[in-house]
Length: 168
Image 1 (cartoon, rainbow, N blue to C red):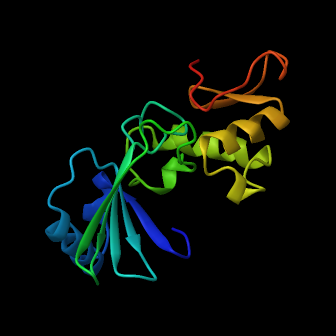
Image 2 (tube, rainbow, N blue to C red):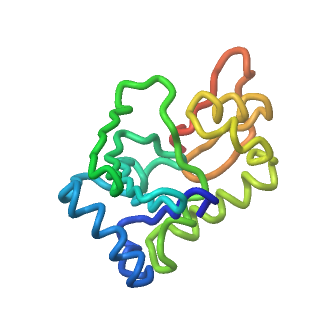
């Protein structure tokens, strides 16, 4: 949760309060079922509900946002944003905070977050919300992500730019 919104993985929706489920249902009534939704964003300051698609949520340590559908409940308007062709899409951090306690992989997500916190990667939170900002933070610290592990970069930062989706 941020001061602006509560983010919930779709599998955790049954775990939220009935009032929040009604709020989400109002958004769904306006948008219809949004295929591919991974995360539901319940805005706290405005009557808006967002349906965010992160198709690689389970696979990538920091999945990129592919698309979003936002329901504005005040204006009864729906907007769509497509990030699939973006060279600098928004990415997710702290994946364990979006899922329920029994979600497969939750402990693995939490271990990665703890490693990233110890490395100081969240010190400049506004700079790491996009793929390029995140890669730059990793490069500065000579770190890379392998699977769901944070490791020292094995190659010079001048010869290889680390990515948030390095396989390992």
